[in-house]
Length: 411
Image (tube, rainbow, N blue to C red):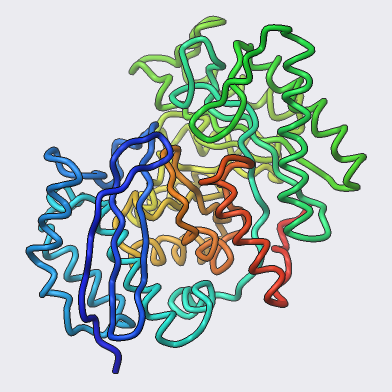
């Protein structure tokens, strides 16, 4: 039996230049390494990223307690994760930090995969009891909200989702070409456009919601013809960031109470044939999500991020109230790989689709690419920028080295 021999933690930086943590879990011959990302628009119900003392406190806690893990079998994921929870002793990883916990949890699973001499995605399919498939890439094209300055769009992300494509590579390249096309249109529209980007590589410009969607639509139509593909539109509203307790604040138009927001979302979906709608309402409005689901075409993926925060209890509440039909999965929202997989299982058992997602403050770690192949229909990890393309290029490599086909979500 392979045993954990040592654990090493180090402070690194994410794509925003903020401190984060990277953890190596070592056996005699192998090691698993994972670095954690961080979010900008953070759900109030997700795990605490780091304790108030910061990354150094997490590193010290892991260093002082590593003997709790040394000698354990890295393939015993549940035991590893139970020890992480016991070490932290809180219900939201506020002592250890969810970022440190998930890095150690997933690094251990990577070590287990290396010990078995199988690809990481294959090991994850064993843990999740799933069949692998290549996920469709959801690309961030225009950014606003918490990912950009105050002059940017109010909606946080304007997205593209290649659906009818022949390969993962074609889908990824199609998104990149849409991104290039948007830049050309923005430069034509504004001769002084500076080429600014948001946290996730999407273009940042002072645009109204429909202006951004018009540009997105025009760009996708051009690339569809060039690539012989079907590319659908999506938006991540990140509505919790707009919610003031009474209504949704829009800088360029009138504020909207909940029913007005629902009507506005429905209108945008119908006008622009939107396929993917994430967080259209604030994170506690399960009933509102249910209303949107009832009013919008059943073809549309209504995704909960802040609503669910990769948490089984919140996913179950959504199931009970028929809220949304897609769950966003961010492992560091919940803190362990076991809980991440259990959240995915619960969603799948109740016919929810899965989107595995990056964070705005990313690293070049490719773990979520493998998690997406193992468990999801969609991967949301941007379209450009090195920390995003690290995941996309890993998907291309997986496609080349395996006989895994594309997800059956294509529409």
